[in-house]
Length: 274
Length: 333
Image (cartoon, rainbow over all chains, first blue to last red; front, top):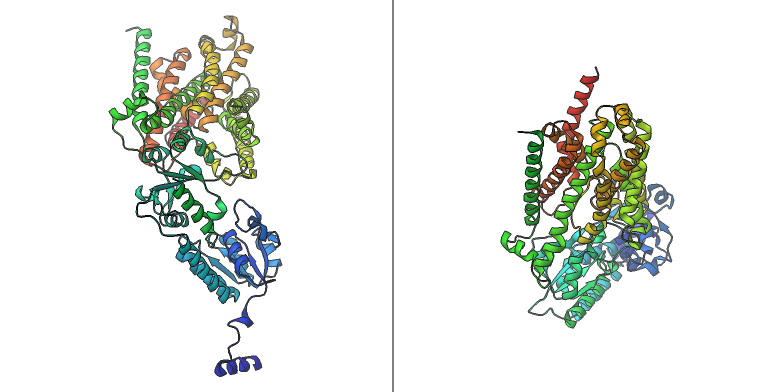
C-alpha cells in the first residue's frame, strides 16, 4: 500500500524512477539459441542466470565465448523450474509441452518469433530491452546496428545473382533472414526468381542450369549425414568450380542479432572480389 | 506356341518396357528441358551445364532405379523359390532393415568415407547376418509363420538400432534421415553411388543366377532335389551371399524400398508357368520396371518434395500383401 502510494507520488511529481527499474526481472533464464544471444547482448550483469547449451557451440552461436560464463540448461522443464527464474525466454519453436508446463507451474515465459527480416530483428532487440528493463541499451544497440549497416555501403545497381544452398538442397528466399542478408550484401537472390518465398528445396539440376554468380553453401556439421552429401555432389562441385562460392558460417546466419552484419560484410567483400 | 517361345516373348516385352522407362526416367526432372535437347546433351562434351545435369544427376538416378529394382525383384523371386513360400521378400524378412543398419553404421563410424566400398560392404554384412538368421529360425522348409515372425523381429531390432545410431549422431540432420532408411529414395544420388553399388550387385547376380536349376528341382521337395544331385548346403550359402550382396548394395544407396520383391514375382508367376528358373530373370526385369516407374511417379506427383519411393511401393504392396495372407490362410484351413 505504502509502495503504491509512493509510486503514485513519483508519477504525479514526475520524478521518474528509471523506467521499470523496480519491476525488471532478477533471474532470467533463456532456453533457446536465439533468445540466449539477445539476452547475453542486453542483460545487466548478474541478471541472466542460464543460457541453453547450444549457446556454447561455436558453430551455431556467435557468442559462444561469452556463453562460457553462464551455466547452461538443456530445455527441460524440471531443471528450468528448479533454477527459480522469474522470467523464462524461449524461441517460439520451443517445445510447446515444456512451455505450457512452466506456465502452469507459475513461471513467466516470453516467446520470441525468429526474426525473418532486419525490421523484426530491431523489434526483437527493443522487446528484449523492454522485458529486461534495459530499454536504453536496446535502443542504442539498434542505432549502432543501423549505423553499421549504412556503413557497409549501398548495393550496386547491377546486382549479381547469389543462391544459398544448404543440406538437402535447402535454399532461402527473400522472406527470410538469410534472404535479407543476401539482399543487404548487394546480391539478387536466385531463390526469389525460382519462386521460393521463405525457404524451400531447390533441385540441384535447377540450381545448376540457373548457374548463379555466387553459391553460398552450408557449413558441414560434425558426424556424417546423407542430407549433407548433396554439398559434395559432383554436379554442385562442377558448378562451384566455374562460379565462385562461399561457405557460410551458420553462427552469423541463424539468429537475428547484430552479428548478421558480419555475414553481410563477408558477402559484400565476396561481391567486390568478383 | 511353345513355353520357351512365350517366355522369350515375355522377356523381350519386359526388356522393352525397362528401356522405355529408362528413357522416361532420364527425361523426368524439375528443370524443364526439351526431350531432344536433354538426350543430345548426354553425349556432348563436358563444358555445358545441361550435359552435366544429364550425366551427373539424371543418368545415375535412372541407372540406380534399374539396378535397385532388378536386385529387389530378383531376390524376391529367388527367396520365394528357395523357401517355397509366397511371403518371402527382402523387406518382410528383415534383410533390407538389417542392410540399412549396416549402412548407417558405416556412415556414422566414418567407414564409408574412409573407404569407398565400405558403405555397400557394411550393408552387405548386415543383410547377410539377417538372411542367415532368418534361414536358421524359419528352418529349411521356410514355414510361413516362423518366417514372418522372424522377419518382424529382425526388422524391428534393426530399425530400432538404426534409429538409435541416427539419434546419437552429433550431426543435426542425421535424426531426420530415419525416414530415408525406412522408405528409400533415389533423390540426389550421383555416379559415385552407381560405382559403389554396381560391383557388389554384379557379384550378387553371379551368385544367384546359377541357382535357377536348383530352385526348379526344389519345387519337387528337398529329398527329390538332393537325390537329383543338388547340394543343398552349397545352395544355402550361395543364396545367403547373393541375396545379401544384392539387397545390401541396393539399400546402401537407395534405402529400404519395400514390397518390390514381394509383388513383382507374384505378378509374373502366372506368365512364366510356375517355374522358378524362368521367374528369376523375369522378376529382375519386372522389379527394374516397377522401381523406375515409382521413381518417375514420385517426381511427377510431388516435384521438389522428395516423396519417398517406399511410400508408393507400400501403397501398392500392402493391399497385395494382405490379399496374399488371406489366400495363404484359406489354403491352410
